[in-house]
Amino acid sequence: GAVVSQHPSWVICKSGTSVKIECRSLDFQATTMFWYRQFPKQSLMLMATSNEGSKATYEQGVEKDKFLINHASLTLSTLTVTSAHPEDSSFYICSASQRERSYEQYFGPGTRLTVT
Amino acid sequence: KQEVTQIPAALSVPEGENLVLNCSFTDSAIYNLQWFRQDPGKGLTSLLLIQSSQREQTSGRLNASLDKSSGRSTLYIAASQPGDSATYLCAVDQGGSEKLVFGKGTKLTVNP
Image 1 (cartoon, rainbow over the protein chains, first blue to last red):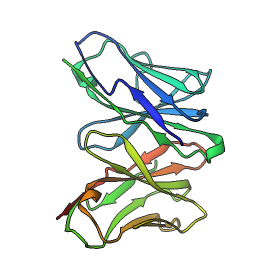
Image 2: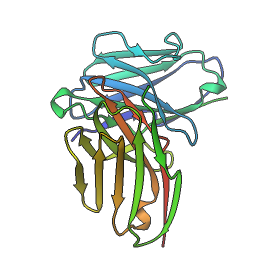
Image 3: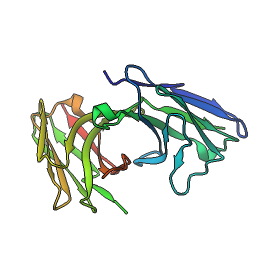
Image 4: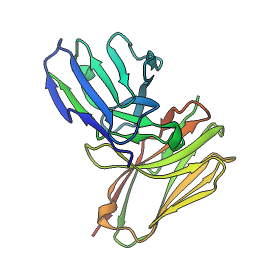
C-alpha cells in the first residue's frame, strides 16, 4: 500500500507556456500533499504544502503566482507551472501523508520538466 | 533553521563490504528521521523511518540508528551488492510541521 503516482513522468514545453503536473495517492486518502523540486546533484527542496480544500502554504522564496497548487480532493493535488522559463527546468516530486499512517510521507516517481 | 548534512558525498566500495553512511542535523527537536534511496532520474523509495523516541530500525541488510541528542543518524548496509548503488538521502521531520528537511545525499557505488 501507500502508492503515489505522478503524471506526466516527463514533459518538454516552450518558454511562456504553462504546464500542469498531477499527483495522486492511489490506495489511501492523503491528509497532506507536498511538492518538492530537485536540481541536478542537489537535494530536494520543499516548495509548498497543501491540505485538501484549503490554500497551499508556500515556502519562503517560492512564488505562489507562478507555482499554482490545487488540492482538489484527498487523492489528487496538481502543480501548475505558469509562464514557464528555462530556469524552471527541474525534477518535481510530490509526496503524500496520512494521519493514520503516522504522517510518514510517500513519494511519487517525479516529473522531469524541461523548458526550451 | 534546520540543516542536514550527509557525509561522505560519494562512496565507492567493492561488493560484499559493510558500510556506514552518516547524517547529522543541527536542531534536535525532530519528530522523526527517514532514510531514502533515489535511483538516477527516479523518485524516492523510503528505506527506514525512525521515530524520535526510537534508537534504531532494521530492515533486511539495513540498520539505521538515531542519536537525537547529538543530532546524528547512521545507515549501516551489510554485505553490499551492486544493486545497492544509488543516492541515499536522509531527511528529518521537524516536530509537528510534517516538513521534511533533506540532506544532499551520499552517492553510493558498489563495484562487482
